[in-house]
Image (cartoon, rainbow, N blue to C red; front, side, top):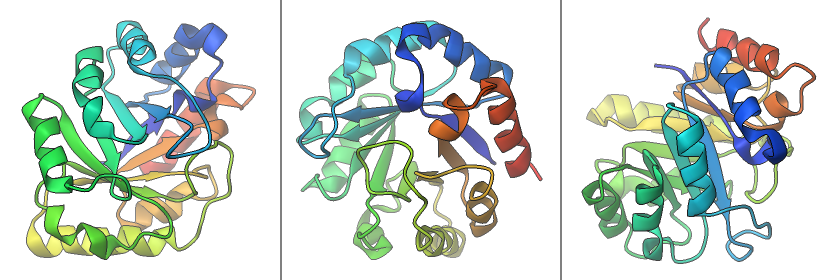
Length: 218
């Protein structure tokens, strides 16, 4: 299963409904929502109110990536806003198994993200709980960064572990995904591809999304 998840971080928020419609027409599978608080990462984006608004715009699943401090305090609010997936960062959550179980209890699918400097091995004890593992292929906080090549090694490790032990998680990659990097991630075993600026900064948003979608279906 190969799924395209456009990130609205790079969308034009003054025309958000139109921009989401463009990627829907191109066959997008998921809408990725990057939530930043200016503390865990230097940037500030949006919270549950915007996620709720996006949920009213689209029928696609919402993949809410929490790049925030103390995400446990906000899980219920984001589920109530319409999040289908909630992803928290290994680097921030102390009791990760408890947090993942809480997300599931609230009715969403549970994801965990790792930053570029965080080894896959830090997730060993929660791989059976996770519905999604997000490999950050840039340091989080801003769109438009360059893909970090070692992310491919991490994706391969997660794919090998998934096959060896029968885990069910999706492998997601976020950061620097474009027509030059998406095939590498796909070949390594990635399932979900987050793309922001390579889609929403293009002259033709639908065409850019369609091109990426076609590349992962090859």
